[in-house]
Image (cartoon, rainbow, N blue to C red):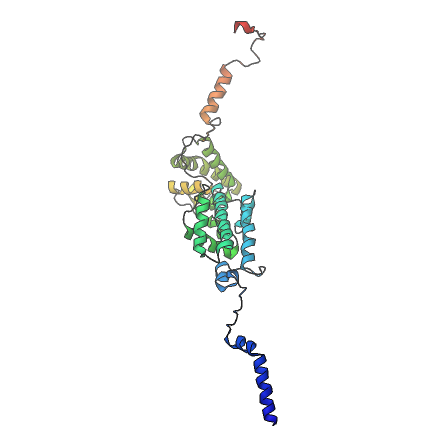
Length: 305
């Protein structure tokens, strides 16, 4: 009797909750919505390598964009050179390259923030290169070059020093010019004065005939050394044979380079020896303004003009 009552009650419960049972067994389960994005993936960490101060890859990219934008400010390029170039070795061209690389990488990061869920990193680089090229900046026209710059930048968050000697911690100038900075000054002055007809051969002869003998004479008088000749003196600075190729290397290390002649190219010849001699001679031969008679000015009416 008790069993029958229990069965009746069980049937009533099933009849009352049949809809719930059907829904529970036959309706598909709702899939859990994932809140993770590309920036939380292992691929993003491998590509962008955030630092410990960054909460995720996205915050690292946003921070680097602000860092790269400093390059466009005055002296801001130093923040993007490893070591900050304390000796001012970077030339104007080096600074320009650093600024342009910063523009490319910053633009690629900005595109990546918007498109990395749908596009690959190399595609973002290609888009960034195309947009920057439209502005007239053509340091590169390929996305793989931009991707390579990114890989070099992400490690130190700075570019390697463009000068190889400064990069490894050595003075970029040769030992002779480091020991005698006056020699470097004389060479620069000679090149500046003779800029119109400057070539490697003239600089080579100037160093051999003017700079080396003058520096050797001063050094010999200070050291009071009678056993050294000019050749043995130069060997102290690892100069056994001073060739025109060495002269060209020195000129490049002093910041000189070949460039096309342009209309904006200006040469000041007032300090040339022949010009100075002519000016001195003309001042001696011609009367000075003090010896000229005082002639009163004559005015002409406008009707006579």
